[in-house]
Image (cartoon, rainbow, N blue to C red; front, side, top):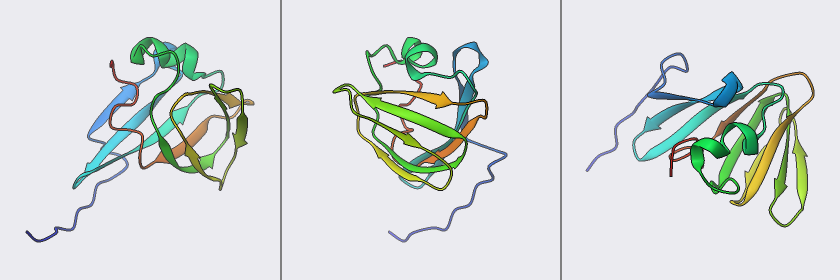
Length: 122
């Protein structure tokens, strides 16, 4: 089996999953066997308020690996540890966390590992 080159436009995702209360969305792209996403999180967004009702889990159970393009986000693990991420930061966020946007600017990021089931009913 030979590999095939693929290309998709950010303007034409395979799927868009909106968050509750119009607090953002994730645009989903599948290329080969990989699924990645571009998340847009509006000021006031918090996982436990705007995604938890969709996911139906107590905390986010996705593993996220990616990069923050703009804005700031805090991630708090179930064990209480937390970290703030900002533009230019690459991140790894294991399952079992809450997260929220910091400040009045939307947070935009790329996630290359945690999008396949993110913001979908479990």
